[in-house]
Length: 346
Image 1 (cartoon, rainbow, N blue to C red):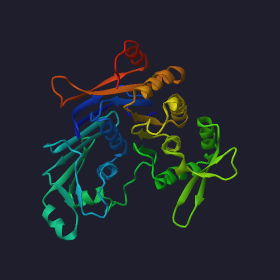
Image 2: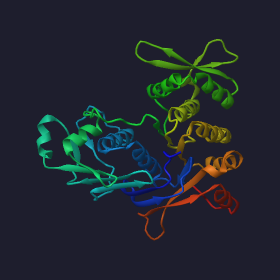
Image 3: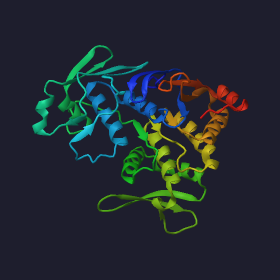
Image 4: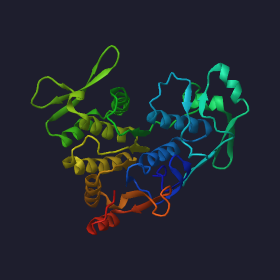
């Protein structure tokens, strides 16, 4: 479990001016009010997990930006919005890696069109890894790496790290995840997980087309399979989570708003499978939620399955400074005590 992130310090990343969270475990659930930084916390962890050297940091930042921003990737202007307002440094530190990014100046946009590159010739992004691997990268080149217009041939990104967004996965992304399951020879295992989740299901099928692949669900009592898209978002999300845990074997999986699309009566079943599967796959899971029912199900299931390897992280703003965000980390006993006292943990 040497790849697990045990603690993280964040400085000047999005809404966090400074945040330190310790004692992270294999399965970690993040809760808190709206706009308190739950998704940003997952993104910080993902960036750290994917970064091994300066170029991979730029590419990891690009994944984070593109997932949140709706800009067409053909646009030349790409807003850089990860550093806290009016700051020019960004820092992450875990038990495995130290990362620092310094901007010599902050442009409003990255513009990497040929006739615009010259205006950034004197502006650099300095990236420092573990206090010794330092590299100055011109803005134009850094922006190209973020947009993946320029991908250094020697950069290797970890394939066993994935991020499930709060919305249902596009079936192209789902196909990419499921492709790893096929390569691992685990399609029958996934069918078993689906039957455990919904006893009516027989198997998950893929129907190839000329341009893409379409997912279908075969039910036990029906001869003709039905489109996965006709089943609503819950089943799509469940399939994505289970497959992504195995795709992230010996790595990390980040799940934003884990409860989305899943009925509250299925929360305990979902957590049971996340706890058991992450243990088998040696995968560290970080999930975010704003559902009290989901947190309660997490606590109950942890007591039955694996209470020693879970943490609940509650993010909140301080009373005296609403711009300051702090983290309270609870194990299963502390979380249950909060419930017994009637305290709100969201």
